Length: 78
Image (tube, rainbow, N blue to C red; front, side, top):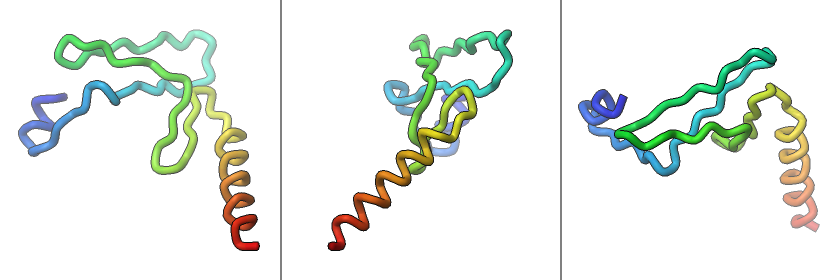
């Protein structure tokens, strides 16, 4: 993966790269991966382009976050 990115002139930041495995199966096996012998962390949620992504496909945290951000923005207008 890193070699393919390098050929395109891109750099992978190994310290900030994470894996979010989505699914609802109770038999879901955690995915393990390494980049240049550095393990990549498996996470339960992260924010990507302003959207909260969760491994259990629950959208409630994202909706709540957006409502709070909108409320804060409108409160600042008064």
